[in-house]
Image 1 (spheres, rainbow, N blue to C red):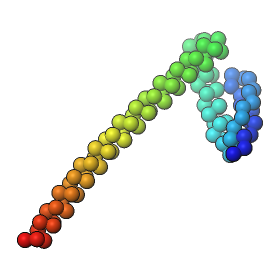
Image 2 (cartoon, rainbow, N blue to C red; image 1 turned 120 degrees about the vertical axis):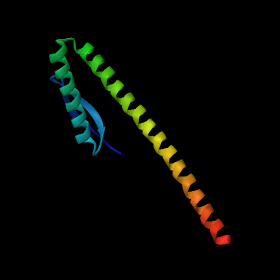
Image 3 (tube, helix red, strand yellow; image 1 turned 60 degrees about the vertical axis):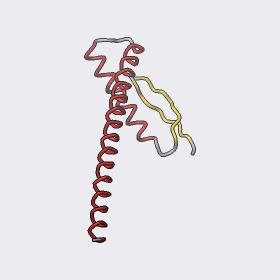
Image 4 (spheres, rainbow, N blue to C red; image 1 turned 90 degrees about the horizontal axis):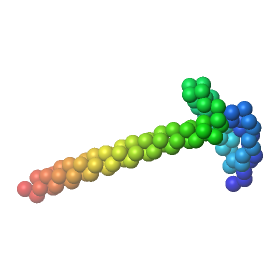
Length: 103
């Protein structure tokens, strides 16, 4: 897959990044989200050091990602347990039907 050069603006600065062809819009949305978060954080915290802002934003986003990942794993585990319960119920029902046919 070919890469495209895409210009993104974060904290008023343009950065050119390579992006897989066809993924430009998601990249631009991600850059806008990051820029919005940084702008809001700068206003809330009065932090002006860009490196510090980027570090805090990266930590916040990593925390959110890890929380979602943990939540997803918990949901997958719940679904697996439920599927095992349903499979056991089905096997039990099939076994009872087979026993009823034999009598």
